[in-house]
Length: 289
Image 1 (cartoon, rainbow, N blue to C red):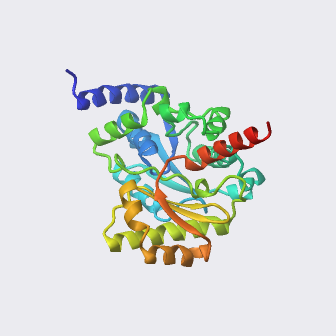
Image 2 (image 1 turned 60 degrees about the vertical axis):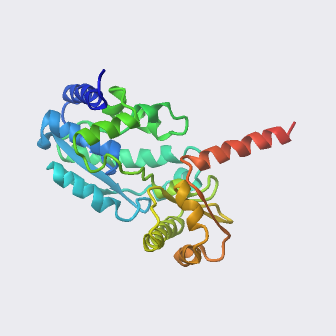
């Protein structure tokens, strides 16, 4: 019987073959598990000098993520560039409709393509994996397709579980890193994305994590959702129930900029705002009959 390690090794060979065939590229590099694996695969297949890490830096990037991304790139011996993006200047992004990610990725990828060319790279790759490609809530993938962006993980048929397994096999520090989507993903659809909303979400998540650390509560997953007329803190299932009674947590969220808005603490659910939007659409459709 083939072990999990052997399976990961075989899939890693497939990834390396795809990367080798792709040739030198810049990576749209967030520092998460997916893009870090693409970066590491590039180093193994092509050499560190044939890969460039480019991180989009804007108000939607959570505190600490840029430094963490740079640290991993440094351990891989890869040149790293932080490129300032201005998705907040896009009306489509500000409007925060279901296609918000398309406008964000368009701005980000256009910038990274420019940086790549300035450094002598003709191709850009992202960490899009096979699961992402099957997710109906990923309008940003269209922006990449329109620009001819390469997707080594998806082309290798790698799921998120495969990404983590190969990353662990290669001893990458990101192998078990929780997903850290952009801060705008915390804002309920239809509520305008502004710098103020993004910064208070960032402050609130930092403050909540500090409260949980002091209370000795683990929090691999943490989201502060801006619902417009309320705020919701989502945590790992076991932690949420224990954290809900912490007065210090509510005070921290209020001080971060949410003031007297009603606060709830609930178990984390990935893509929750997407599903809530669909539920609202179904309810509206049903009420119209």
